[in-house]
Image (cartoon, rainbow, N blue to C red; front, side, top):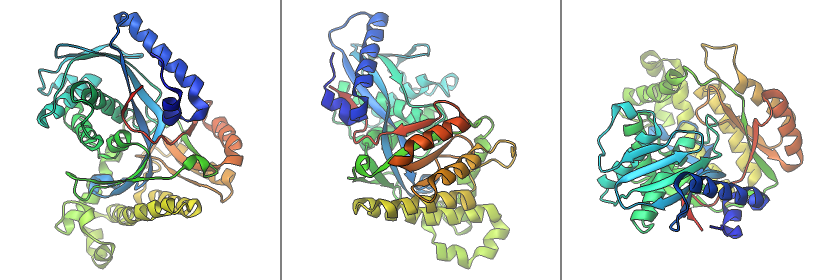
Amino acid sequence: MNINERTLASLYGENALSAQAERYQRAQKAFAELYGERDNIRIFSAPGRTEVGGNHTDHNRGCVMAAAVGLDVIAVVSPGNDSIVRVKSEGFPEDTVDISDTQIKENEKNTSAALIRGVAAGFKNAGLKTCGFTAYTTSNVLKGSGLSSSAAFEVLIGTIFSYLCNEGKVSAVKIAQIAQYAENVYFGKPSGLMDQMASSVGGFITIDFKDTANPVIESISYDFASSGYTLCIVDTKGDHADLTPEYAAIPAEMKSVAKFFGKSELRDITREELIEKLPEVRRACGDRAAARAFHFLDDNLRVGREAEALKKGDIEAFLRLITESGNSSFKYLQNVFAVKNTAEEGLVIGLYMSESILGGRGAVRVHGGGFAGTIQAFVPADLADEYSRKMETLFGEGSCYRLYIRPVGGTEVK
């Protein structure tokens, strides 16, 4: 099955046509070697995402900006006529899941089989159809990069169910909500909805989670490729082991401040209220919780200003706001390094060196959850080669990824 070049250009950019065409051919060949030649093959894709604005705001019903990127999970799929879903992901054992059984399996927690079963359960709970299929998947969404490989996989499974069993009529928003449900309930990982929504919808988007059952999603039309900047994600190769308590403390501390005011999330209080009651909040919740609350309240409003800057085509104003957000994450959210391991602060070093190379141009900030992992840099095109070279000298070959902003979310590829 040959993929249209125009489709590939939309998903990956003009510079990646040859490499992606070869990738799709390899995936189809791998499927045929595993399952035999079939004449009912269909192909699907779901992208990773990059968080652009609103760092740790979604879990308190805040606003975020995100963008789908040209790194994705693709699946070569053959529809089945039973309730068995078989998924062989490159480099991993095959998952075989009977989706007629949607009971939560404790022994499946933290596995891809749990995600498959969870997405199937979400579809059934919503009154949507499910069906069996056989798939071979391959991914170039980097694990541990903050680009959300798990959300891309969940959205991929939901997209397959939509097109194979529901005529492609399940909305991108519904697929994202089901994907989050699968991750939270079946996989066993608490997460906000941003990752899944950005992967499912595609392009630059803002999401307002004030009403989590009905998030307000706005697509922003902006041609980043012509902005004069390159979006880079730098993997500082930090160790994510034992960091779960650090991540979990952020929403817990933010919500402790909200609870002080009789609310469940920070979205329901204002900066002025926090300032007025700050002495009492410090005593009740602690200083770090108060500082993190200030970050939420400021970054939540900053998302709207970032969106307006892009709508107006004012890339310099947008980059100033990205810098503000990064500074707030470092100083007030405090998710750039873990205090228990001061010998490893790769994000701090990466941020310093990035600022040194950029010399006041572009923008750089912590990316995603923080503590270890990645930084995000908007690099002037004339500095992109130098920036990439110096980051890879520091963190290793292949640690700096230049990303394409993808306008399409989860989709069938033709």
